[in-house]
Image 1 (cartoon, rainbow, N blue to C red):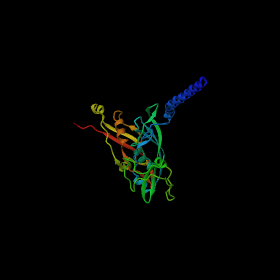
Image 2: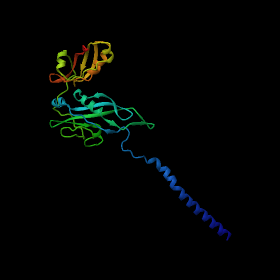
Image 3: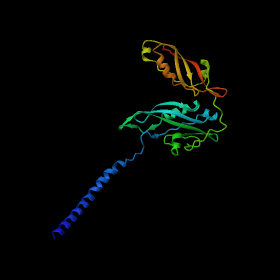
Image 4: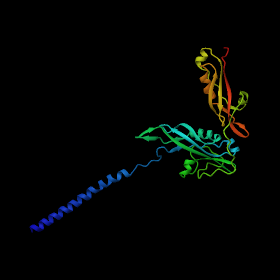
Length: 274
């Protein structure tokens, strides 16, 4: 009996130990699997949450110019685009691409859980198809995103996002960039948007007036790229430059190709007699 009792007690102890092990196993299993269950995110950090595609530039469409525009984008802590720099691409397409990229919105980048400024790259592809121009986001095409992006302007034939076709064989070769110097009268004839400067209050109070003369470099797309002051009062120069940088010109064509323009711009500041 004593031997049988010892065997019975041993069996009871083994059964009790197995039961306790079974009860403790689930928490251990949960602890091991928890790190593998990452929380779902609707937009991973750095993802584009608003993508605005540019309209195809009419002059580029007429000249049968297409291709990719590669841009370096600086994303602020809130996900807004703070800076866009051209890396490569035809000048007649670049200006439209830069304007559109400045309207993009990204999911903020995080470092140690805190939003930080980040540089990334964006590629816009301008494609000619049957006489119409389409624009697509090459990055979205590569990941298979298809359809119109919220906030994007409507374009002829819709927005196509898909495989990027190769450059057509009939596409004319891009000429070597050129620059021509033209008179103020010629450049004035190309002016399509003029912003008048605000008269500086301190200059008005001091009764300072006169002309600010600047040497300007106008891009192939008709934007002011650079201004150098030739003459003018120091209190008038900043207002003149701020206004002129917003001016817009028609592209200057040489043998059918847009070229940079070197010209002179005069801004007059005149006080009323009152």
